[in-house]
Image (cartoon, rainbow, N blue to C red; front, side):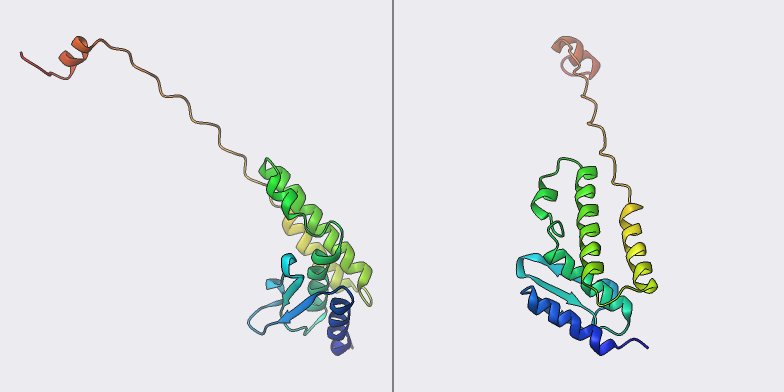
Amino acid sequence: MTDLAALRRHIYELAAAFDCEVHETTEANPEDAFAIPGRRAIVIAPIREEAGYVIALHELGHLNAPLGFLGAERRAAESAASRHNFTLTEEQAAWEWAEHHALYWSAAMTQVRDYALGSYRDFVPPTPAPPPAPIATVHRDVATFAKQIRWGPR
């Protein structure tokens, strides 16, 4: 049997050790968790199973892994594919940090990690639309155009 109190305590101990805040909300499911890098905070659902624990570790990884948050680099990227590569790097770094700092690593935790990473790897960034074709300029003399639109005296 997993000691959920020990897993929850471990999240709070890691947060304190790395100067982070943890905000638990019963309004969220584990997969709704997120990190707020500018506040060094994570928002998580209450830890009721190993999945919630490993997701909380992952969110702490976004705050503490050297490559866990590359916001400025991602925003500066010139293409959707480049931005996506930065996101993949962030996600991989956060999961590696989570596995390194976990009290233990189980098969269920591996499944959560693999599912989450797969959701990013399977995403194909949209290809930008080609620029619109230039509008053809029609050159007509005024008299011919006036006749075409039946303007003026007849």
